[in-house]
Image (tube, rainbow, N blue to C red; front, side):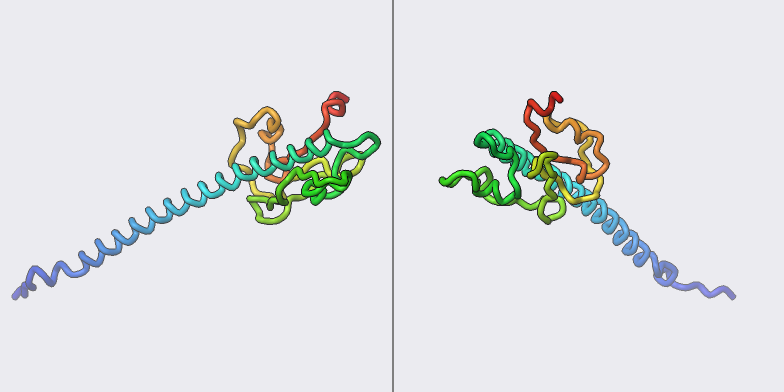
Length: 162
């Protein structure tokens, strides 16, 4: 004799299977969304690094171009960009010392050959997302393997020719 079970008892577990499948699909979607958000955050940090680095390079350029005769053309420390010690009146080239947007730490100074600081660079060893499409003064960044190789330096035109 064959015992027939009601239709409902044979369908047990199907709802559970569909609920698990739905949770899996939602988890995959959220994972993809989170990955995109992380990528967008890195791109924003990278753009901010380019902006802040250009601020430092321009401040060092202004410092160098306003150097009195007989003085070293580069600041001894980054704090000299906040208040130029060579003049009795207050001369500022930066409002404040900006942190590195990628690491959140201070920038690493790039020493000048004749002393002083000729630029800054990031301390990050992460691989840059942007590899092309840089401005004319940032073309050396295209081949960089890490953000640390992005040096925001100012070299006067007469020294570039040599």
